[in-house]
Image 1 (cartoon, rainbow, N blue to C red):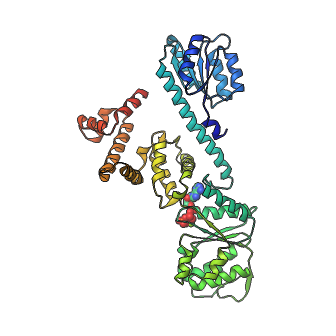
Image 2 (cartoon, helix red, strand yellow):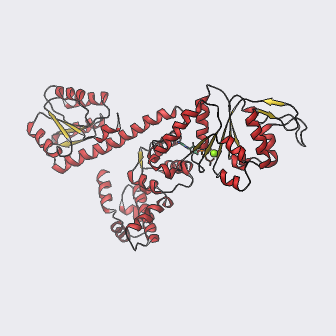
Image 3 (cartoon, helix red, strand yellow):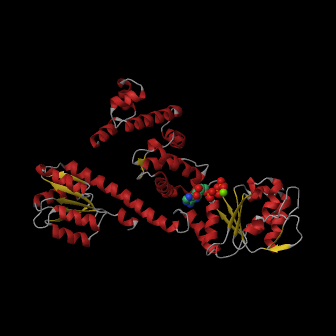
Amino acid sequence: MNKKQCATRPTVLVVDDNESIRDTIEAILKKDYTVIKVGDGEKALMIIKERELNVILLDIKLPGMDGIKVLKKVKEEYEYIEVIMITVVKEVETAVKAMKLGAYDYITKDFSYDGVANLVKRVIEKQRNSRELLYLRSEMEHYMDIGFIIGKSRKMKRVYDVIQKVAKLHTTVLITGESGTGKELIARVIHKENCKGNEPFVVVNIASIPEHLMESTLFGHEKGAFTGALKQHLGKFELANGGTIFLDEIGELKYDLQAKLLRTIQECEIERVGGNKTINVNLRVLAATNVDIKERIKEGKFREDLFYRLNIIPIRLPALRERIEDILQLVTFFIDRYNKEFKKNIRGITDSAIEILSSYHWPGNIRELENLIERLIAICDGDMISAEDIPIEYQYNNIVSSQIKEDNTDVLQLACDTFERNFILKTLEKVNWQRVDAADVLGIPMSTLKYKFKKFGIYDLLKEKRALS
Ligand SMILES: Nc1ncnc2c1ncn2[C@@H]1O[C@H](COP(=O)(O)OP(=O)(O)OP(=O)(O)O)[C@@H](O)[C@H]1O
Ligand SMILES: [Mg+2]
């Protein structure tokens, strides 16, 4: 399946032995869909084989093969085609049975114009969402082979191209990017692409190692090299021998050690602290930083020669706000991950929630997004993550930009209203859309709640939800 198919005009097959019903349904749907009509089950199955269908409107009583048999066959072989049963009023029970077999819904033969049109529209929307998800998942599975997802944005494709080119070379790579953009993940990918099996990948987070231990952590020490050096100790470079060393936050390395690091990289040999022999190492050096090293050079805190040695191949990871088109894919990926972890079954995220997330500035980048989705999956009890679930601080930009559109809006009031509306909706959801219970939980009189329904446009939603439940 590809996205293009989802975007073309959907096709609906109408199966009914009554010609006037076929024609009426065609008249209702032909404006928005391609409609095919047949009078029996056997012909329906032929069409299903030949054409790409989205929805089948299927009469239960048909000459020859009946609707239930056709439904079973469709669901066995074409699970992505949705089926709506057509039934006479007195056989509604059979239609309900059909829904247990996988039919999406049913209509009775006294259907209304709007009833049919809305139902088909809903089915197609649902199908589009789940096909989109499926498409994204299959794309992601590919990327999961290398342990991560790359995103479809141009900026990440460029990153991926560079990775592919450099992975097999032995050169040093400097990965730059804001905190949480995935620098370590990229380093692991480069290592994995280059190595066949069990070669070591050793991470050294320069910022987290106390200054006085830095040299021996990197290069090791001999017994007695300094007070407290009770036995010989191998450094990270030796541990990474044959594989990759990842020097995270390289910008924090002390100036005097930078010369030793440069020598190590150039000559492929190290000397343990307190030792007098050189040890050959054969490894690849990857480094990362979220500070601007050129600035540090200007300040005299970073050696220019080391920078050029590390920066042979630079990879700059875009901030999440620069690749916002990837957000749905990332969110879907994290929903999957945390559904598994928390044994939940959240099906996805609504468009309006994605819109909110897309207008946020993400200072913590993908790590922040991952943490948010983890939190939402843990607490969400609906079947989709919706706008109401997103904490108010993520809605700030959305609120402020709506203010730009409409002059004279009191932004603080708008933020309070957004919070209030979301809170009421969450409460309603919890009490199964029962107004009296909601007023009770919220601790306000029914008249106030009704006023708020009106103010926040909640009435329509309430009607819809109650009709469904
Ligand atoms: N493309 C991606 N797909 C899925 N998860 C990602 C992606 N990029 C980053 N992550 C996740 O985001 C989190 C942060 O990534 P990582 O630790 O690699 O970032 P970083 O740039 O090294 O951050 P810092 O500068 O804070 O050390 C990790 O949990 C990682 O798994
Ligand atoms: Mg990191």
